[in-house]
Image 1 (cartoon, helix red, strand yellow):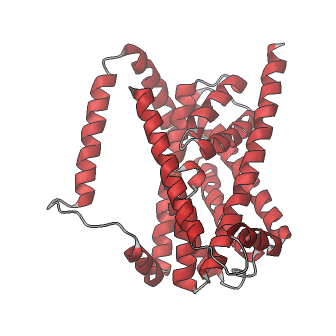
Image 2 (image 1 turned 180 degrees about the vertical axis):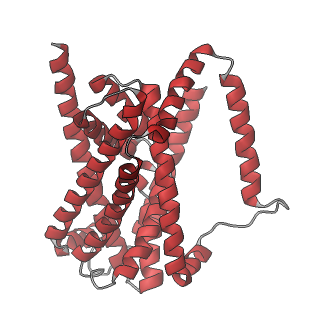
Length: 327
């Protein structure tokens, strides 16, 4: 039953992604050029120096994530190697391109194969990472809303969020449902002794952040990772003639919209990113729809190619390391 539910959820995510991509591509119309010619020409116009610089910045941000993960696992008694951490992080990003949120489990499994860190403990540290990232993302988005409130408030008003007929506010209704589901899940899991062992290891990983030797360094790394994401957006926008002159204000707005789009559980943010970011460029900065869509398709495709190459190389290296240790 659980397996069937996972398949249905994955199928639904893929279907939503395809529909959003189709809707985005539908706006890519030009009398003389096909859709793919427009995207290809946007790639040809791009300054490759900035795109390569973006790839370097991206890999450095992933390296800092690996260092941060190594710091989180140390208080749990698991001395993992930086190589194992870095390879596992890249593999996690690769899997996320195909299976939304699947990378969290795969990176923990790969780390177990490389450095024998228990999966339940490493997964607990991954959840801690995600909580910290969400907090930083909320701070960043909140700051962006303060700076660019006039523009972002207009953008949110255009989203088809709809209104609820319930007297209870939507956020309160969602909170109640979540609490009920969590309570029921905890009650069921506590009846299973094997699951209790897993939960115990998970708790060890989850609270590892409170036992860090260098909490200040960990916070700095976390902030720098998100600053690097911001710089990546700036560098990519500099690479295209259509967006190079929009300024830092535009980078801030587009970064916030892009971060929200990537947080939607679709494979690699495909679909949501291709829909929301072009809408922001058109609505706020009067960029022609064709240029905005072509820019986003090239940007996202380039980022995806980097993640695929990094993940595949990491899989190959991990395979040979594991095989070499066995022999």
